[in-house]
Image 1 (tube, one colour):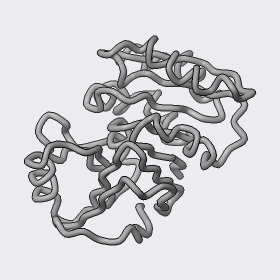
Image 2: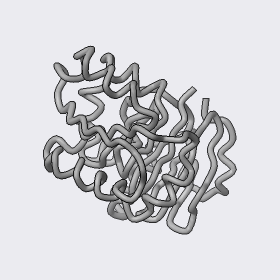
Image 3: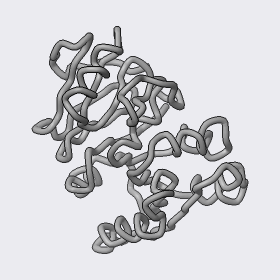
Length: 206
């Protein structure tokens, strides 16, 4: 079963780490989604946030399909207690992880997902180019994660989702999933279904 914490941004990184349900001594920072903005810089940004903690940090760029199907890369990620998925380009992350060895590892790892990258893990994800739903990795159903967009794009997204719960994670939002959904920090979060606001009693996501 997927166990993951989703955050809107690194502004709430410490709050998210407090919710990670593992005693992480080895953390993998996976920078697939940061391929275009710079995987090394993305890894170092999170490494600095982890510096006060007594953990071993392993940075894994894995920005292409060859890396995602490399057994050595998959083993490096799987050997970690926690995998942090950097923010960036979710569609690129999907194209790299889907139907790959690395995607299989992520499905059974403890994850901390930053920004729009968390959207990739669901059965339905949001295409950031226009706000339309598309196919994700399928690690959970019925809930669709996204980050705030323009009013026009947000309206389009809400209108295109017919029965799923849409969770829009603002910069200071934290949501956890372990078979059921739970709000950790909800001051900056919007939840709708069929375009109407609902309470965040998300229930089962499988």
